[in-house]
Length: 115
Image (cartoon, rainbow, N blue to C red):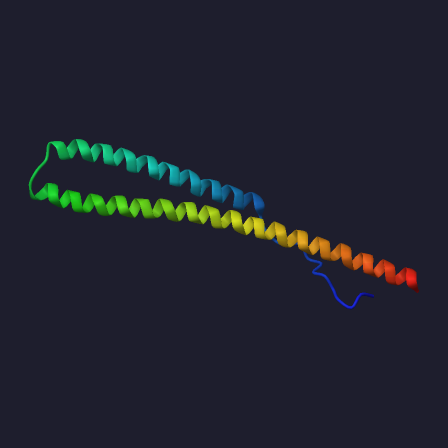
């Protein structure tokens, strides 16, 4: 018998759920990007007719809102990417385990034939 043992367990990873989760993150990021554009368009219209202290307050608050929205969009895209990377790593690990199992069986067969 070979002097090593492969991992006989399959990788436990739900690829379908990961695919859906990554797609949902991307979809929400796209909706968020679209809403940012729409908010900026509406803000431009409002700014053309607005002046004074409340306009200044609005500008500061609006800039923070856009910054937060852009950060959230980037986070969602990064999370989707990490989910896809995890799925790829799980696939690679499963393939490695299967290769190890095949190698072990081959070594075992060769040992059995040598006896």
